[in-house]
Amino acid sequence: MDIALVYLLLIGFGILVYVLLDGFSLGVGIISPLLKGSEEKGIAMKSLAHLWDSNQTWLVFGGVVLFVAFPAVYAYVLSNLYIPIILMLVALIFRGVAFEFRFKADSSRKWWDISFAVGCTIATFCQGLILGALIGDMSTPKSMDEPLQWLTPFSVHTGIALVVGYALLGACWLIRKTENGLQQRVKKLAKLLLVAMLFFMAMVSVEMLLEQPTIAARWLDWPNSLWLAPMPLLTAYFAYKLWPLLTSNSEPGLKPLGYAMGLFGTAFAGLIAGIFPYIIPGRLTIWEAIAPDKSVYFTLVGILIFIPVIIAYNLYNYRTFSGKTSMKDGY
Image 1 (cartoon, one colour):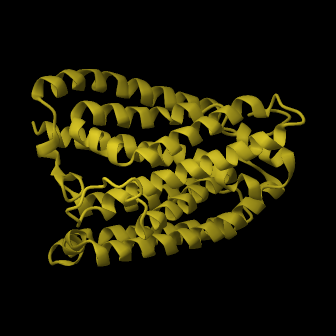
Image 2 (image 1 turned 45 degrees about the vertical axis):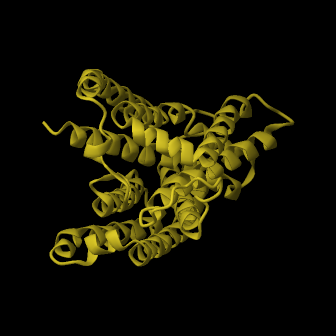
Image 3 (image 1 turned 30 degrees about the horizontal axis):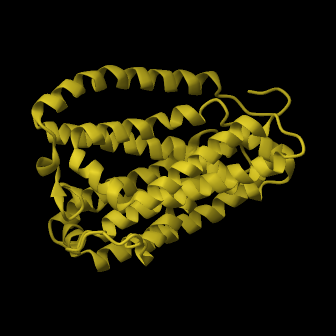
């Protein structure tokens, strides 16, 4: 068994699930300033109150697995990207505190609304910065020793792209959880966000091809280009299927969220296809970075036990609170 590949799949699974699940809860916070009045903002937060913390379980899972399986990568990422990681964690704290105090506050409620929106936006932008810094460092022999060397135009663009993408996920989540006028307003917002997300996806993709020869070779050289062609085609398909759901007055259910998640899935698959087998892009492969066998095999037993438990809890949670959200009746 190729244990390094197994752990890469586990980490990839954890990251993807985190992006899809906590992505829409962060996205709700990003678009919350665009909602009208205290009641609409309250409905948006209430739709997440039962699941935002369980969504973050996958972030912890990814970090723990990375620490156990690829300790050199864990040390490299934390030491070189210390500032955006700390900012992200502080922002997530502000987001979490806002959930606890917003519904109990009276005169200070607007400040908790701001805390929720700012925390979600900064956390998302920092995640995009981290991703952009790692990929953008792929073709340079320099280390990121300078405190702000990770802050480049490319990393800023990936940060903005992720903010827009999470906002689209959040809008699609609110389409499922809201009704009437609020739902129609969120649909209009989601149309704008879909166009913006496709634009930033295309821009970041072109930048990667122009600035990263390794990724360009993987995507453009024959026959790799033939094998990878379905990914952009799937992206176009998901966007094509999502658009009419946002223009219709009917109840679309979870379909918009599913298609928006499909856009993220193809983007994630395209990224992995571009950098594999590197775990630190351009520097360290998964086989060079894997921890000793005793550590990874011992930990794998616990991971395989707890993953089904986490999945089962999440499924039960989502099913229990699957209905529409209102301030009066709850779920």
